[in-house]
Image (cartoon, rainbow, N blue to C red; front, side, top):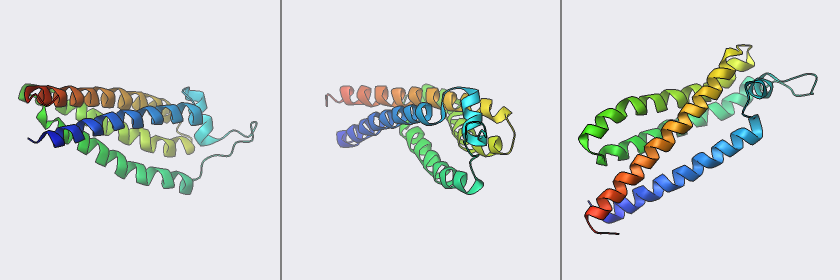
Length: 155
C-alpha cells in the first residue's frame, strides 16, 4: 500500500477527531448536557419564551445528518480493514453500535418535540455512546495506520 494513502487516512482520522470535538462543544453550548436542557431545547418552554422546534426545522437538520453520519461511519469503519483480522471481527459490534447511536441521536429530537420525553435520555445516551465509540474507532484507525507506516519505515 502506498504511504500516501496511509497519510491520507491518518489525516482523515485527525480531522474527524476535530470534527467530533467541535460537535461535542456545539452540543453542550447549543442544547446543553442535561436531560432537562434537551427537553427544553426541543419541546420549548413558554415560561422562558422558547418555542418548540418545528417538524420542518428539525427535518432540515435530521435529513442531512442521516446521510453525513452514515457516510462518515461507513468510511471510518471501511478504513479499519487495515486492522489485524482478529481485531476486525471484534470491531463489528462496535461499528453497529456506532451506526445505531448516531441514528438514535439524530432522530430523538423529533420524538421529544412530540412529547415523548424518554427520548431526551435516549438522545443524551446515544450522543455519549456515539462519541465514545467514534473516538475509540478513530484511535484504532490512527494506531493501525501508524503501525503500518512504521512497518514500512515511512515515518
